[in-house]
Image 1 (tube, one colour):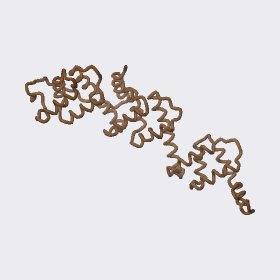
Image 2 (cartoon, rainbow, N blue to C red):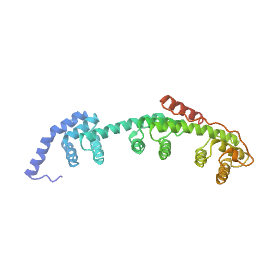
Image 3 (cartoon, rainbow, N blue to C red):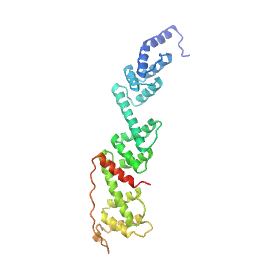
Length: 294
């Protein structure tokens, strides 16, 4: 069937099997396979050599699998080939990183309350991409805790959080801690603003966006409180606040004392506390979670 018909072709074919039988036995031992190599197994070796893998590195990859079969080893070597990992060092780094990412994927799933029957799909679609953005395992653990707290309890939901934070430069563990502290401060302040506007709900992402815009216009909390009081009774208080603050900005009114026909007592605003420990991080996440409990 393969066109091996002449004595020379047969001799060459048989010499190949004789030469590689010992190599196949070594691979079988590494994979903990109990059966003996057969003719079809030699085809795998041929294919791997065509991919430019040296036998020592094939054996090393098999030893990293510890248990499996030639089909699984073939899949691993094809993956290594696609990622241009040929040397022992390259193979070791790639497989070690993949194992770490798989473990992190399972850990994230547990934190999110998600059952995974096959973690590799989620690792390839999410975890590896997050790691490529610069997020450490510790950072991803914290974001998973946060995502669960704010009811983003899926890999898709956590991805939304990460993409949003990444655009803001929130990547390192320290920057995540600082961002959480600012979110808590903003959440509390917006809750106060909504009460001043006589709105009975918790702050939304749109409210946070609006607050960011108002602050970028140079308005402090007292000015924003004053705008909230002006918006009481309006059909859409938050957009109305934007209109008021925009009007004040155009008139270069940036202090309560400059507001026409209105005065308001100045209120001091506490500074954001720097968070440096896991306990404080957990406390911040717990504080956020309280506002998302049904």
